[in-house]
Amino acid sequence: MDDDEESRDLLREVLEANGYSVEAVADAQKAREILDHDGGFAVLIADLRMPNETGLELIRHLRQQNRRQGIILMSSFISAPERKLAKQLGAHALLEKPFRLNEFLQTVGELAGNSPVGTSP
Image (cartoon, rainbow, N blue to C red; front, side):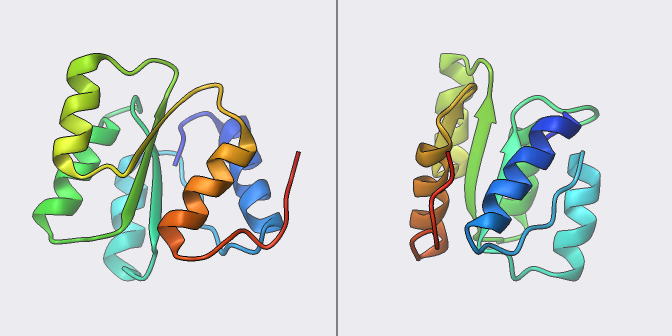
């Protein structure tokens, strides 16, 4: 989930090209709606800063509902307090933008319990 449409589309395309089933949304509210209807997602990828709700608030909400998806939090800047809180809330990885797509795919693969099907530049 990323509020920037271009970034969101790129990550979706890369994941799909590597064999993952993806639901890409622009905000935390839409992510909550989808997760309420289909909790079967193994990994949630969220931007730290989004309109109306931060990635940290979304993680807190998911953990309060005992959701156990692997969580990748990404941002252009993650402060030390935000990094600490993300870890306390159970974020499994923190990626600072810009990040390498192979690093991203490796992290997703580790959390999803498998390896990416292929590689993308």
